[in-house]
Structure formats: C-alpha cells, structure tokens
Image (cartoon, rainbow, N blue to C red; front, side, top):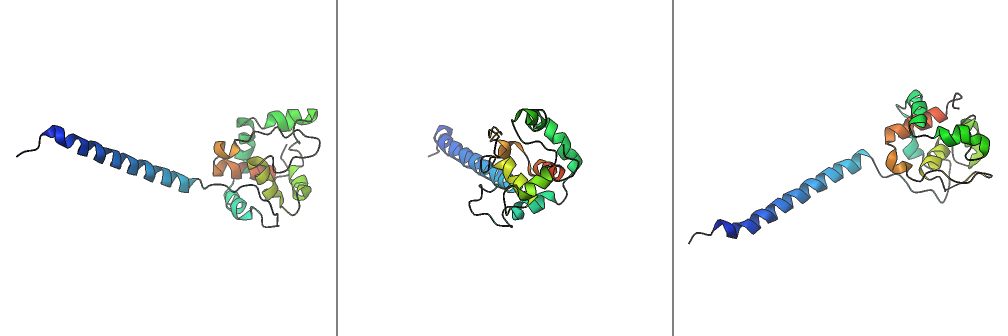
Length: 156
C-alpha cells in the first residue's frame, strides 16, 4: 500500500521546524560570540577590575571616531551643555578625574563602568540620569572608540 502524500505532510512540517530551529540557534550562537556579554557591575573592586574587557576594546580604538560617536549618541547634550546645569559631569578633564573617581579602578575601567553600568557609582551632586541601554546600543568597537577619546586630554 502506498501512503498518501497527505500522510507525509506532518513529517515535512516537523523536518522544516527542526531545520528552522537549528538555523536560528546557529545564527544566535554566532551573534553571541561576535558581541560577548559584558560584565555586570563589579562588587569587589581591584586595580584589574574590567581590564580583561577594556584592554582589548582599546587595542585598535579610534579616538577621533569616539568624539563623533559622542555626538551621534547625543552624549554631548548632558556632558557638555548639561554639565553647566548639573545634569552630568563634563567631559573636560574626564581622564584625570576618572583615574581617581572610584579607586582602585583605572581611568579606562571607570569610564567603561560609567557607560555600561551608570548606576554603579553616581557622582556626587549629579542625578544619575544616564541612559541604561548603552550595553545594547553600543558595539564593542564603538565603546572602545568612545573610551579612547575620553582618555585623551582633548576630550571636551
């Protein structure tokens, strides 16, 4: 006896669904390895906190692009114009302040934490109004470029 093609239909649907789930899994797995999960805010700080993440971000970072990205992501609204009104700390002199703001973090580590975990430490006399979604919005490349720019003496 021959099975009718209608009897095979559930098998085809099941195979299609299996292949579709396998493709989705592979795409998500590859995507996750391209943009690794960033760390949670550190509870116990050391001089090495975040450095295993920050150091690779700065290897080929483009500080000039970092300056452009600060405008693109509208960071300048609060950290330039808004700094005068107490909304957020100014970028001017940030590298020097960052080196001592949250001991024993390095300046780069402090800036990293401030961008990705802005509520981990809120600077006195400021509101803590920084957006919480930069981990989703910034690529690793963009994050490295921004940190590199903020570490320059030209940051403003």
